[in-house]
Image (cartoon, rainbow, N blue to C red):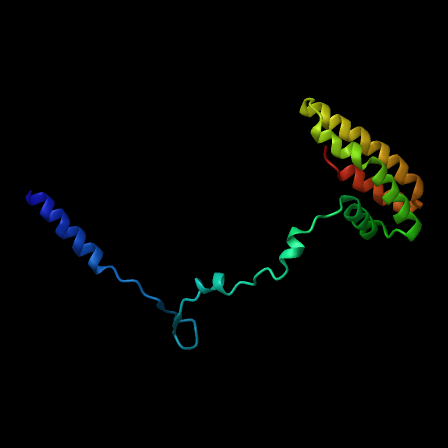
Length: 142
């Protein structure tokens, strides 16, 4: 019983002597002291202003063409033709996920479709664009 009282006494002493400070001493600051406001950063973080934009569905074909346009500087005809190519193959690509086949077979099927699309796109590109597109293909990992 005496040891329990001693443990409670030591615990109370240790916990009572610990003090938390919101202020700190910083000798490198001009005044030498300040208030730690790191916890306030979460409260003052920017909020998402447009929740509709977060819930908005993204058209994969449109985004893919935008990315290719940034990298290859496509003209309007090329953008339209590539959009048609992707739209023609979109259902086939998205259908791979629903098929009940092994993952390895799904990857192979996706690779085959990608190669078919790549062949059609390369025919539309200029020589310089085709070289850049080939680099994009080479960087792609299946």
